[in-house]
Picture 1 (cartoon, rainbow, N blue to C red):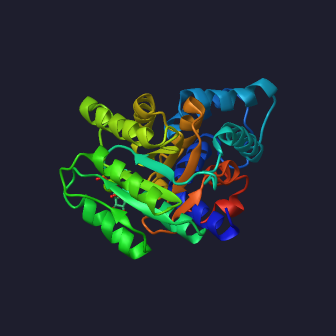
Picture 2 (picture 1 turned 120 degrees about the horizontal axis):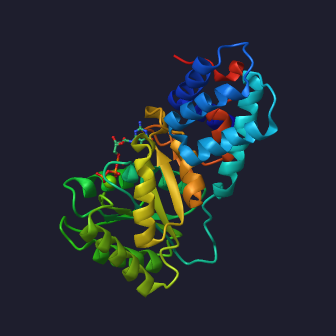
Length: 313
Ligand SMILES: Nc1nc2c(ncn2[C@@H]2O[C@H](COP(=O)(O)OP(=O)(O)OP(=O)(O)O)[C@@H](O)[C@H]2O)c(=O)[nH]1
Ligand SMILES: [Mg+2]
């Protein structure tokens, strides 16, 4: 992330950070040293901040193993280091390969998590980087979904392939891919309908989109990106599991980190699946979107010193 982007990301993560810090501070008032007895309480706070049981116990264990007495600053530094170590394996930016004729990105996820907004943000980013982009409106289900994508297309000046509401989504994906190849488009981004992961029929429809694309090019889709809303907390773990079983996820985008105190779930997600986290989204505007970086994330979650952790309203 560039410096400004990093600063904005830091600011936007205030709710999650606030929850973590206030939790720690309530157990360990300032100036007080931490001995091994309070570690259990600290662990409970980490769990409450959506880091999950496995992550929380591993983080606390690393302190327990070393023993001794810590100051809160030392503890935070140690925790941050642990979190960076857990996030680094999933820091793997999305690559656009010039060797591919058209790179296909299929965007999936449950209802209302921010898929279409993410499609727009990604389009903006790729267009700015000089790639030609085309969009496919495969949400043929929800009223106004096609119009929503078309209006993004106009705003971002990229073509949108769509058909009437109710059309088979896989047919739209097929036509869009053929058209993108014919027009030598660098990146085709497919916006799919929101679907509850527990809905078997809708998950089958997603598999069909996958199959149809692979019939044109066996390596497509080249990216299947799950969008998850951080506000859903631990539930995003089951969403990820089911979507991954259906369509083999290659990337994740975490949205709405600005609106929730549950952003700690990102660490649980990273540990549980190891699927690359491509992007983080912290608002409704196009620029509230950044490539995921382990260190910047850990810093925004649990900064080393209070100077940079203020202001917290
Ligand atoms: N605060 C905040 N709002 C967001 C973010 N991303 C998306 N939104 C908002 O969330 C709402 C839903 O976004 P959409 O992009 O339409 O979500 P979707 O997943 O495409 O929804 P369906 O297609 O109905 O499943 C919109 O009001 C967006 O502006 C984010 O990172 N932060
Ligand atoms: Mg949508």
